Image (cartoon, rainbow, N blue to C red; front, side, top):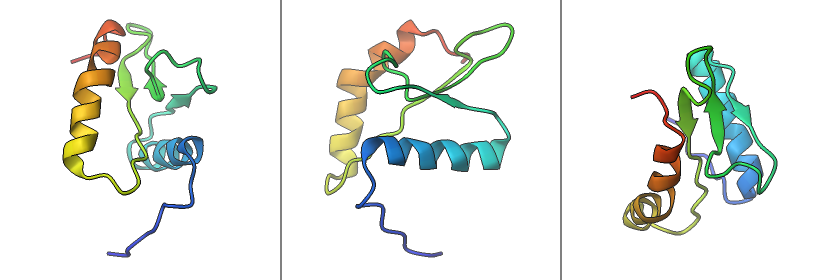
Length: 88
């Protein structure tokens, strides 16, 4: 596998790459949002039954380890995602 370096990307560029890769892999049609308008959603896929069927958090943590990323997701992001009621 190639060793890619994403350190030059900003947060929005990282979200865009995540969106493009997930859409290519799963053919979803994920949506992204303007900065500050997402209410905890980085990417979203909606169905006619659920406006927030799939919620994606794309976090670009340069130089931090998995433990710090996991801690941030649990403390800051999980509650926001739960409020959006994605499909289980």
